[in-house]
Length: 206
Image 1 (cartoon, rainbow, N blue to C red):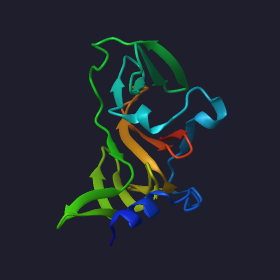
Image 2 (image 1 turned 45 degrees about the vertical axis):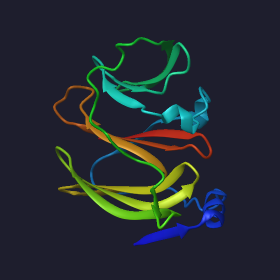
Image 3 (image 1 turned 180 degrees about the vertical axis):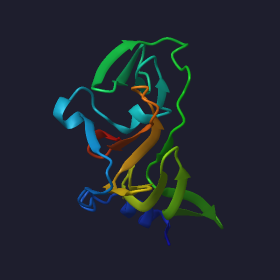
Image 4 (image 1 turned 90 degrees about the vertical axis):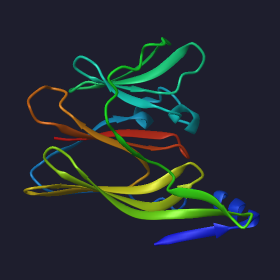
């Protein structure tokens, strides 16, 4: 299913929509796995999670943690360090060799496709399902259209042998698997963020 908006008037009307379309977030857990909210910037107010922060942002491996590396401003970088028991915020001096051993992650944002047909500008809202194979689970990503100018609506379902966990009505997301505590089993991490209202949360499934 696709929704297409054409013309300049509709373009501005579409991007002028408010955030009232946000649906209630839900976690439906029908498995013996646990979900954890590891970080919520609304509780900490460290930095403002505006859209410019997420230009080419990366998640990469460190010794016993994961580093979420945001777009630099001047000579400094904002980072979140994800350890097994905690998430730490820090600002460090920018170095040219900071991007090492980047972790494979999947990202979905506004769910919009822009294109021209016969000199007419079109905005296509994307509704699509994509499947991924993780080490001990199958992951299904549901693109559910756009929420606001720079945030989409997405849901993710993690299917295990013994059941599933469904994260419903997320916004922009980046997700991946990694074994931080080196116990031989990968955890699944979901970073959920909305630039519209500057929110960022990190969930973990174990």
